[in-house]
Image (tube, rainbow, N blue to C red; front, side):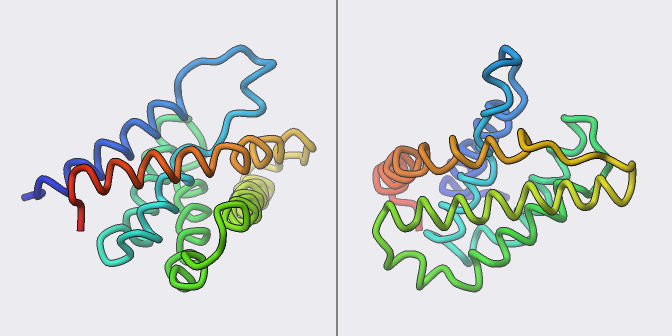
Length: 159
């Protein structure tokens, strides 16, 4: 059974999933930030014992189902990115918020490249530069998401 703290974490992840699948105009959709990745990165840095690679894989698998992509593509990419965060969370925590934003951008780029490589291997996808546009919006949004989730964590005393 989930504790009160676990329900809050799950709720933030579900909001991120909803933001990832909600319809947007095509001109804006190419810049859609990686909401699930950002939220997972925050919780993995804040509570690495509770949010980890398994959580990332499950959330990625859920994205695969909801987005209609090949099963396991987003799950594998999300797990790889969160593995890097989980292994280096103590170092990343000590960086300034803008340095963390750049690290988030690098991990978002890795996430998109892994998704592309797997899709290229499985369904012969072609690379478009627009695959990496979400990296820009992810970098820009990281400080606000970080401060919002930190406020949520402190308000609900999530440990």
